[in-house]
Length: 246
Image (tube, rainbow, N blue to C red; front, side):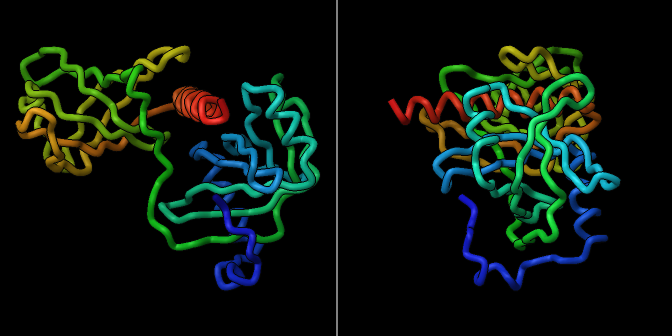
């Protein structure tokens, strides 16, 4: 949940237009996940910056799949947008949110913020995958065999997996790059990417046998793949929110 305490956040405020353009431009290029909180934090929507339109002094953001939620955002007086840039939390306020077409599809347009909040908190937003609908990472080991590893969390930039027993042949040491991996996202299709191993550590197992969790970075993904991951995360978060309300 974002902080709206202005006095508490003043020391983190960035007012330099050049720096604001740099940060928001990076977010647009990487399609980083952005959470928009509105209606006093009672509602939120997951989106991403599609374009930094410096000439018209505005941001163009991805339109959500839930039209009722989109309309509530458009009706809100303002929204607080929260995301990550280089593992640092970034927050800014958007007012006068409009709907218009961008490259033939609906999008949100908001005025370019005059300041942003940048808080040194090093973490990425990641979605824990649903227990009842497992996601798998498919890869080829050094012997040419196909291996399926269970994905336990996912973001645009990376995934966490449980190393399968036969995964020892893949070389899960930090820094290893496993090419040609596949992730099948429900309702979104197959995403292909190279995977860089970032870390590996033992976790508790129900059966008492050693189980290892492996943190991975996704490489060589395109904008369509990133957008598919964002839509998947948005849909799962929306479903969870509905279950909580029921």
